Image (cartoon, rainbow, N blue to C red; front, side, top):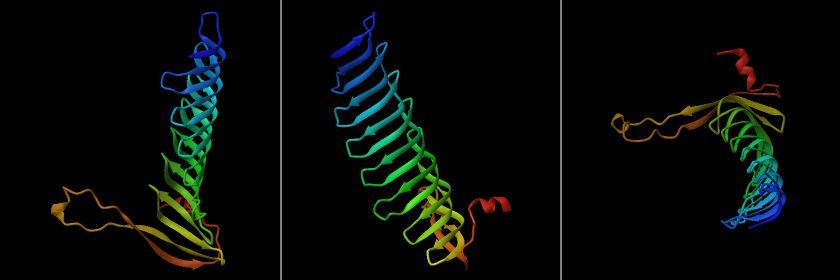
Length: 213
């Protein structure tokens, strides 16, 4: 069903309201038969998108409300979250930062609602990866992350005015040789090895890159 403007060729063109065969509805702008411009799309499952379209795809600025109560507000490119945006998760966590191909990618800040902790730093394909700072209520960790976990040199800074420098190292559990073929490798365990405690210093993860191997 469609109610609204059409062009001389009978295509939906201008402003209109439509009910799709699957039960979804759209109210907004059309151009030559396609959703184009600003509109609101309501999904039968309770989800809702309100924002810009380009040739039937979410493109530009828009807000998507999900059925579970989560919400994304930000940039879209060809139906994908891409650019800059803010996501409020169903559990109350939030992410504000860069996106690519529907995933957290680039620089961004993730706030954990339950603990108040904050990850500020790099993301790659939705995973914490690269230089970052993990900020807790009375201390913070600055270092590098790989696949969602800290790895290599870093430092903990405590609000009482001191720092603990050290390194996250991987510990691999030994296995018997005959099992090696059949089983998946066991997950790596990370261990923090403290090296020294100092007063506050301006160290950052990039420093060790400048020093070289």
